[in-house]
Amino acid sequence: MTIEEFCKSLPKLELHAHLNGSLSEKTLKELGCLDESLSEFKKFLNIINKTERTLDECFVLFNISQAVTSNKRSVYLATKSIIEEFADDNVIYLELRTTPRAEDGMSKEDYVTAVLKAIADKERDIIVKLILSINRGHDAADSQDSLYSILKMAKKYPDIIKGIDLSGNPYGGKFEEQLFRIAKENGLYTAIHCAEIRNDKEVEEILNFGPDRIGHATFLHPKYGGSQENWELYCRKIIPIECCLTSNIVCGTSRNYKEHHVQEWIKNDLPFSINEYEYASRSFDLSRNDLWSISYNAIDHSFASTEEKNLLKVKLEDWKQTNKRYF
Ligand SMILES: [Zn+2]
Image 1: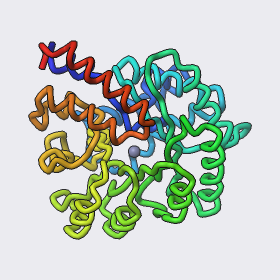
Image 2: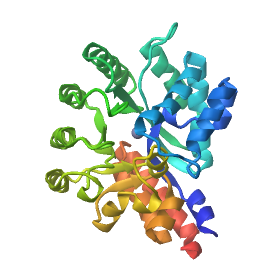
Image 3: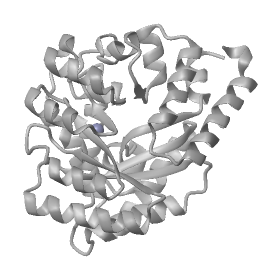
Image 4: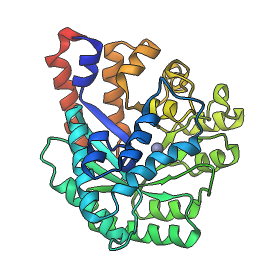
């Protein structure tokens, strides 16, 4: 079994998947994406030919996806096909995240309901949970409104809507701790995008708040532009980070796989999850057993219930047993 086959076959957990950042070219096409936008999309994903790109420019990708998911039916179809594609890749547990969006003829709750319906209608053996995001670029009134609609939906679907996230372009807006405190008090887990750019003050605020997980953490370690104080604070808090290797490279926040900050977490035995096992194995000289352990350890970082976590652990252990000759 080649390393590529091993990574594909390994049962995986995906803890950082943006609904609007996970649409494949095939799905975009099916949803009626304009040719012009499709070629823009392909250009962005072409890592080899990338010129110097800024994180700002990467939000273009989200705009392309948002343009084709502007009604309930397309949101439903997009979610269904994302779930299928993750299941095809042997993801057994998926936490999808998305910002509830109101459009003409679709309220924020309609949007979330369409996503939930797609999750309920899934035909594959994959556990899917939802993390609803607050966009940091929106004004205080809109964020407040989003929070209350998230809390309302989460009360109705507590087994699916597990957490709240702060996302959006990190060059704008800010971390409003109060919103996340209220979400936490209402039983939601918190997964917060943090240190996507260098912003020591905000990183310190987020670390002090203590979310359940941190997204990216690119500029947190001092070797990667973070402050020594924040790194020490992080080492006291020890919060699992969600790493997206390719996305960091596509967006230009990491130069290449070998220079990705996750290696500091690997070296220091700190908690992390990844979504590109093959690249990680090639870049950081990880054994097949290491790759299996990364997937296994992600179970405890997930927002699944205890029963689901136990089930996932059994699945991974069984897979290891069946495939022990490939380790
Ligand atoms: Zn993200």
